[in-house]
Length: 94
Image (cartoon, rainbow, N blue to C red; front, top):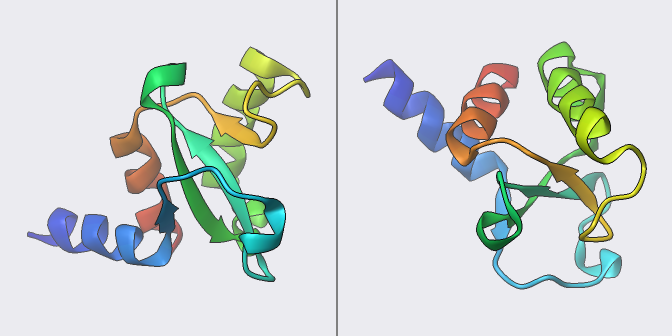
């Protein structure tokens, strides 16, 4: 039950955007990230910029750097992991 609450809490923090939109539609203090293991399954999420300082989120960023370097195919920050891992990490940051 605790996992379910954490999972739902993480989903509330992140504002999922189905369509890819411009950076100007991302609220101040937030950033867009694309999460998924391949191009067809990537989804856009908006997360607080404060996540950049969190060690768990930095681990996801390291994985992204290993795979893409600084050349992200979507034009935004791409995190190559399964959505459930992303939700787990972001729920632990809260």
